[in-house]
Length: 121
Ligand code: HEM
Image (cartoon, rainbow, N blue to C red; front, side, top):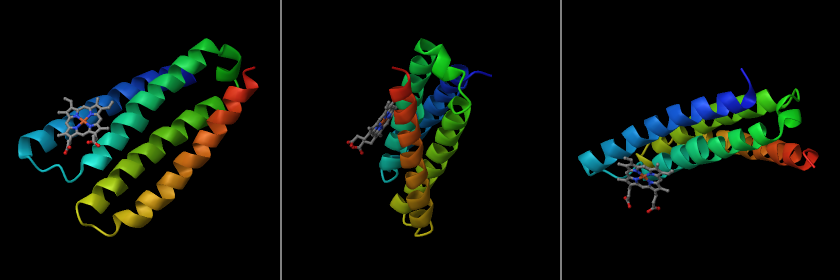
């Protein structure tokens, strides 16, 4: 599995999950989990798909040892972040530390991706 293929496939799964979440909010008229839906779609679909395009455009970076871990960490941290943010916004305090830790992991992984972009020349 290449990094770009993992990006494209997981981005589409997360988009479908994000859309189902959005439809559920719309149909139930309960929009309280809206920030979680937004984060899942934007980090899980938009950012991940853009990462995939970058890796496809830069095969040397895609072959580096760091590319697959960067993508895998992003996927896991995004899912955990969306769950944490969803819990926070539906009144569950346990979501706070979950969102806090996963957001720091997303940040660290964004720094790693930034470094990979800079090494691409
Ligand atoms: C069928 C697909 C979708 C449905 C039914 C849906 C539904 C919703 C609903 C009900 C809200 C809450 C609006 C509010 O309370 O003000 C919302 C907010 C939001 N959605 Fe979606 N959504 C869909 C797809 C997407 C996609 C694909 C993205 C991003 C790529 C996205 C990003 C957002 C964002 C950023 C917000 C927050 C907007 C704000 O701050 O007011 N949504 N969506």
